[in-house]
Length: 139
Image (cartoon, rainbow, N blue to C red; front, side):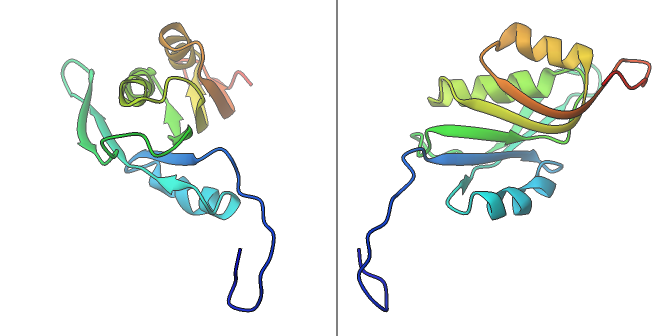
């Protein structure tokens, strides 16, 4: 390979990583993760919970028509009921990422994590702390 100064031998990471912030709160994680993985592509999903039914509604999707990544890291500061996490994972799997989906979150409810694992047991979740529905710290 050639740089502006000289030729060099380099190694390219085989895995193409995508960062998927759930709008808008997930955007707060992007700068930090781009610092750790500067080659990652940022792909945006907007999902909100409908007021009455509390069901997730996709309102924004900037995924390319074909997957341009091999693995995704979903960025969502909080997993409450797990509905948004389940919906986001389903969208990514329908898009073509059948495995290698990871979540990074600050806090989650035990029930939300159980809901995500029930629907998508292959997803790996990194969480700082877990709360029960009464707001008590579990771990």
